[in-house]
Length: 354
Image (cartoon, rainbow, N blue to C red; front, side, top):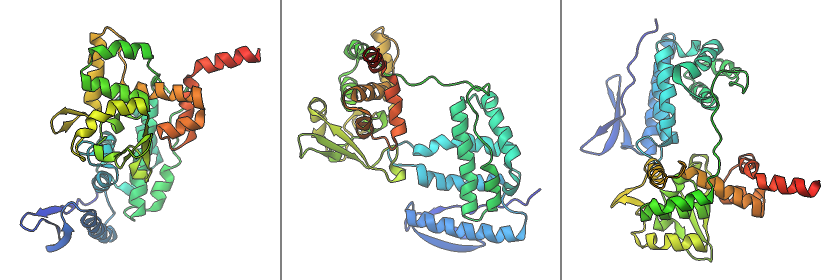
């Protein structure tokens, strides 16, 4: 059984507002609490401490590696305005499960067989669909890749894990998720009268621009450039911001008319607020749409389907490249999903081709 070590805590010195950490009885001052520089210095000191321990014993346990990665994960994937942990929340379940199954074992001894066993058990034990199983497979690999990059574990440990392939369609019992389909405009129009005015405006604005629900709820007046005929909303906080991607939402006349009255707020205040000072979240927005559809006696649909409806419309009128530009896709392959939904084009082409 490997020796257990306590990982020193990143702590706040309340009087000074500085971050500090105590290592082997020595106080280290890191800089302003919560700053990236202080966290980087903390990680550096802890990495050195763990490296020293690694020389003295058999190495880190999976529990220790996961605990260190989680701190990195919150910094790397967490973003302001996206809840307590931001996108890092998507990692919590698989990290917890990894610790439950292998937490007390040496991280360096976690090999392909153990990872393959976890992957095979994901559908039955966790109830995850095939695609989500494969996403979490990559997350586990990412933990060990990060650990190897900081020399917490041997690089060969990570390299061995890369040999484990994801679950393939048709050769696994894992369930398949249904694709997200566009919502018919007739259904949207029938639902709109049952919505609160602000939800109605959010739906119509999203339908007109094709933006993501997560982008919609984070729009502020200061993000909107109204200097041209087509307004531009440049978001600093969006789905791919941690990949250094720029996201611009292009706002035409119809969407401008909807958004204009919400731009009278203070520059850095959210445009779409459920109550003063509190913006809608993607969850509360989706629930509001679901309730409205139920009141209107319409099939249940979700805001994300509006994006697919807009993408299909743009694809039909302007082509695949326009879908990529309007919807902000990083890769054309993602945009092709919307092309596949446009059955009418295929039917028309078949008629002309005979």
